[in-house]
Image 1 (cartoon, rainbow, N blue to C red):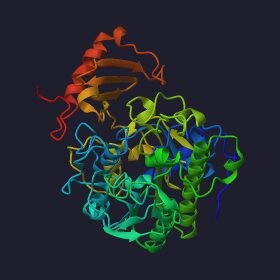
Image 2: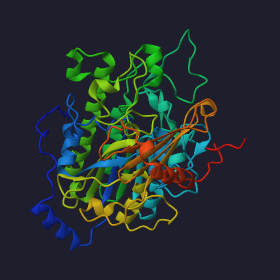
Image 3: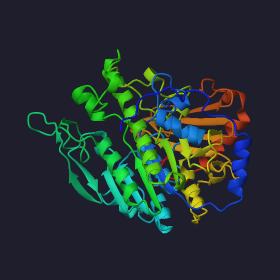
Image 4: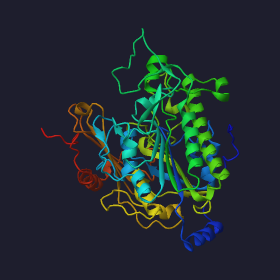
Length: 491
């Protein structure tokens, strides 16, 4: 079934909760909720402004808009990090990057087998657990890493570099390779990516598109487990670029069909990006329709979000963030800790339970997922986690437990030269430290009032020395030193 673009849901998606919401809330309070199935859909490099329900004007996402219309849209949800592996580690473990065992897309950073994860929380509660898509939980994870982290079933890419290729020669299923009818390109008969992580590259024979495979396996998983409680983690790869594709073929937005975008007077990468957004939106529609078909719609919580902000277009032949205004009014992109790098779309839908057509302005982050889901299915979690449960918000109740602040740190590739970045969100204030521990750059402190300056255009650090002092102390106390790659290496 193909879903077509539509503008029918463009206006009035998010009314304030009225009398219906109050009546529904009383109904929720008066009954004990039955633990639902949970489907967590994670896009890859999707910007805050890429969805029409978040203000996208050129492209439309009618199926995801439908989720927002039938559920709750969050305007201040933050990813775990500004790049893939640490963001997913925060999501899986309930720890922020001041405490997580993965803090960058760098080698030898992996979530420990003894750590509590989302998969283990659901498995301990008797759920069937599945993960389909891009794992990429640190670098480089072993083929059976999903099983060790609590997932009964896995199908997809294990390492993040393999996940760049939408037509790979193989995927992994439950720790074993499954060969596909695709063939990696060569140069003079030699694999030019032979020294890269397993599976890296661009294919010259393209028959099996992984996003379509993930769709079919996800629907099969739901069908197979229709009579059981299940947790399905669905980390798609769209709309992430094939990084190797840019240099090899001049286009990294690999899609099997450009749809009606083919006739648009756009650069080819932008047509590909639009088609990826279409494929992602269609997938959401297929999943919701499958739940309805099986009578599981009102028994299933579906969440949609993105692992971090959009990828910057560093060369003119790449997809450009500005073309579709992928980061909306927010500053910058992936790889930074400005709002465009870490504030992400987040929509939750559970018919009959989550108040329809509502918004939340509460501040949450990926490390809140584990305690929230544990709260949802009555599982205990350690007090040592950085996250809190936002289940009250999902149910339309008052959120009494709130974060004092949210903390991030990110290590640049050339750490010795460029250092790291730290950021803290505290109420309306956002503080950043740039070039931390850099040998070749001077450390910079920035302070923004996001209430009046959501685009982070006016650094007011000089006007608020008391806040600079408070945040400077937090930048030291809000974290634990990382032995693998210390933020403050000893001289």
